[in-house]
Image (tube, rainbow, N blue to C red):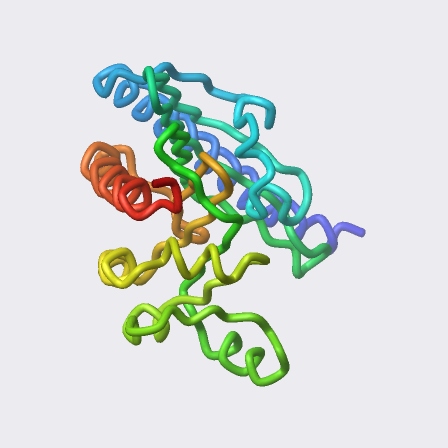
Length: 222
């Protein structure tokens, strides 16, 4: 029995240290994002329920896995548009294969958007293999660079092709790691399993806003 404790006690100590380091990092991130929110003119909430997303909660991302969690939520409401920047976390798998996924999500709602329901992801090898088995991938004509880099899906292919014009596709091709989802007046932008560092938040926010404006410009609303 004593032999078990010889190995168990150091293991528990290492686990406790890891937990403390994670908690400390989370606290530092929370404090930094709260300060950034104040400087950028956003309201801040440490935690929030899914209802804060409004109709944006219907996006596929927010229904992945289990135990969804919104935290470090930045909100700003304008006359015609609103912005949210938030850390979104969910869990997949179980046991030794359990994984926690965390990403910073930019949610944009605008009266100038009229988007068909779509999902856009960076395209990987297994996506290309899946296409041979019938997995949907909409390839906008005359935009080969975009089609090579992204997987694009949605139910109304004609409306999606109308929105994803050549100029929009050329703009998006400059952001090969970007994921996007849209429906009606809502758009989310994020990188899978990637949280924005607080020090990079201002610069990254401007990039995401620029992408959102491109979607506004080429939205199906005329």
